[in-house]
Length: 112
Length: 115
Image (cartoon, rainbow over all chains, first blue to last red; front, side):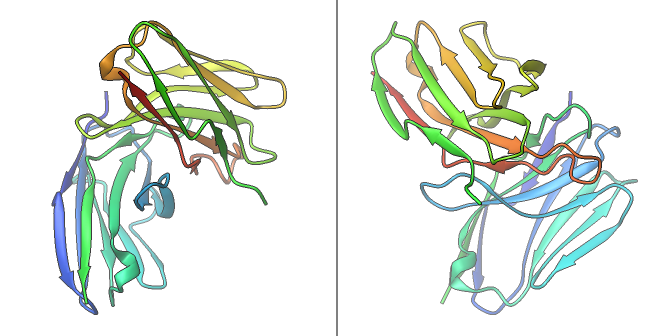
């Protein structure tokens, strides 16, 4: 089955700086890669996703890149703000089987 | 538009008991998935339902079961509770159209504590 590894497990960034979280996956059949943000006491919230037919996607301060050959994808957050502090999860799925395999999460702390 | 609603939000049970958790998906969403979240194991897939049929199942024992009703609402049941079943149980719904496949929207979860 699919295995997703996520690094780092914790990340502290000065407000205004950029943050990068990286994930690798094992199953070449995976073709959908979402990123979720989870705040304390809440469920994961989809913040951005990418499908395997594109290499990069951007939404304001958030971007995701995908390297299918190397089987890794990354989340980039620019101009970080205190409200970006949360746990971020990457995930991978083979569209059609509706089963997300999650990474282990990254606790991002933005230092004011 | 209302999000995914899970009830109850918190519950405490003792070992050996059973529990039923409920999930109401976003209106129009026909796919409902369940995930277990624990500090040690992270987020793990339990099962997924579409049009009242279980389409996919994770690697959990048979004590974990679920069902989906004709209105897309779903329930999951855990029988003979063990201490290790203490977790946040998350429900997610998906629209399931050719252009929106894969986008899961999660509820706030039901936090189960087994004593």
